[in-house]
Length: 144
Image 1 (cartoon, one colour):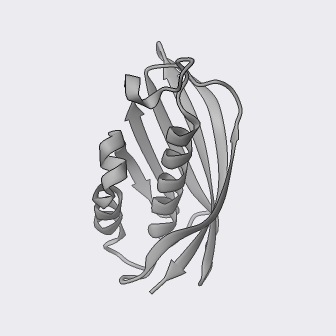
Image 2 (image 1 turned 90 degrees about the vertical axis):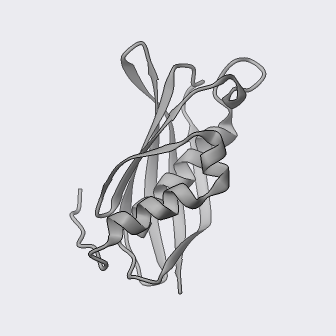
């Protein structure tokens, strides 16, 4: 994995603010777990409202967590005053997710001046076991 240098020495505080400022993310209950340049990890304790009709974690919940976490990974490399917006993403749901918690780990694959590409992996935790449930590829526009 490539090590990146952040453009903004205050990136951690700025990314925490970005993560927590999104009302939809707050309503889901997602939390920021860890940050490093080019990386972000988030978590979500699963509740009944996160499930679809068969009791598995809804694809929209997984996609939202993958997208937002990738955006925050990209934001760790932005200059002060810039913003990151999703331009495109694709998610592969690898297995039906059922468990106690989701963990999303995202990392930047290629930072750019106008576009950054990141990858997110969603793991489901169940009784202490961690299983890969989904992978997303996210293209992010750097604006401002």
